[in-house]
Image (cartoon, rainbow, N blue to C red; front, side, top):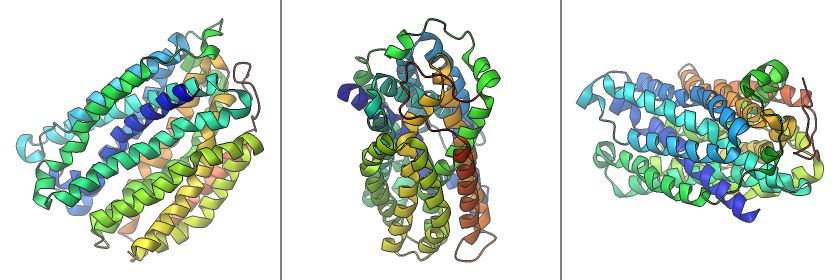
Length: 423
């Protein structure tokens, strides 16, 4: 279990590194380089628009790789998704800017971002299912939380590279070539991830399936559509919180408040580090007290904390901003530490790879793709404190709270024997 969980963690860390490094670049540099004819605000919105395309592609990746996972096994998904994401990320670092090839530059950026999202849409389902389906029932939450630590590590790695480059390069050097280095580094990480995953064995739950679904997505739509919509709505707040903290706030503070890029990256990374460290602890609580109670508590905490978070952010003071981010990310991880065990337990084995991944990634479209764009637009219509952003995030938290309230508890249902709990 330790070897398997570590390989899953490393893979998700690498793939989320690829995904997050784009978000950081979109907040800091892609607007002027690829949309120079736009105003600063329009350029940022356009860069966030290409960022959002990755989220739109993720559910499509879930359908594509979910079909492979439910028909041919979870293990092939891990290799194919990592390869696709790694290659497309390296390619982003090679795209010429608008000044070199004109409108073809943002078009290429859009296509490669789509491919990134397609690969990541398959990654989560494969990594989580392999871990959850191997894990003992009484500690499924703990072992399944390892892939959930991967996004935090990927974020820290991506932003650590950007922070190091920001501290050592001039603004001109960073704009000319420095921003490309994190994308090129993805190639080395992808090779390492493929090597780690080469020894992973297939899931016993998949090997025990006698009747494989011919078209898993069709079965999910026919038999589990309500469950998919509820899980997507429930998870939207997690995405909204995470990308409000890690992507939108970075652009807001550097552009509107004049906070340095280094200070902002340090504040955000410190909060993410604490969050990642606490993920297994929260997962253990999920094994003891259940998945649903923690998800409800996390949503309620998020609804209460969004207004204080934006108020603390608007101060521009590093310590206060860190506290605002930390409170938001603790609410986030109270939900997402147990999601890797919760979602697989909601679906029957024959369509689990498709159903769990589609629900998970649809939540990203609502919460992740729209949040930086909506928040940036709301800031333009408000004062120094972005209360509109706080209201928007609170509304999503209440929506997710209602969806979680309609979902059942699953602990401690054995994964192999699980049947659909909702039709």
